[in-house]
Amino acid sequence: MYFDIAQLTCDIDRRRILSATDVRPRSVKDIAKACHLSLSRCYRLIKEMEESAIIRRAGVDKREAMYISNLRSVEMSLEDDRLSLSVVFRDGTEDRKDFTPQDLERGTIRNIPQELLSGEPSREPSTAA
Image 1 (tube, rainbow, N blue to C red):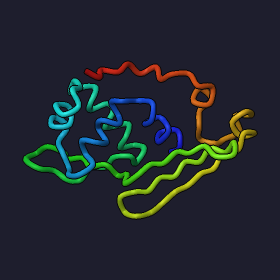
Image 2: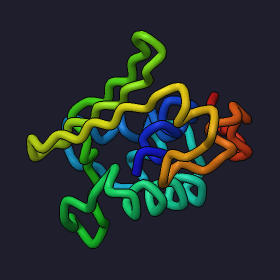
Image 3: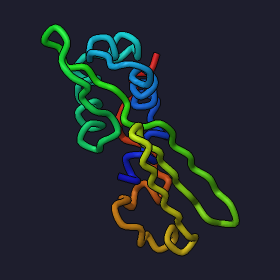
């Protein structure tokens, strides 16, 4: 999960989807239009985000699935050589993870792929306008 949340900071398309679904549920067509994405890319990103519990299906309206962000806030901070990631979900639950310099250097953090720690950019093409 931490990789998925951290990946949001690097991918403008995912951030736009979260923004578009922050206040009220929206259909994929509405989200794609608001985010200037193709429908296929929007469906793919929403599916990935839904699998990671970052976004959730809020119901069906006129045969279209409606989606809403599952996140209330995400905060990443760096203090005294410690990286902290705090996530507050829409239901009020909070999750926090702190990483030491040794965690980052050794790549011993579970659930975070090594390519994120090495600083390599996302290989996913952006369709941002």
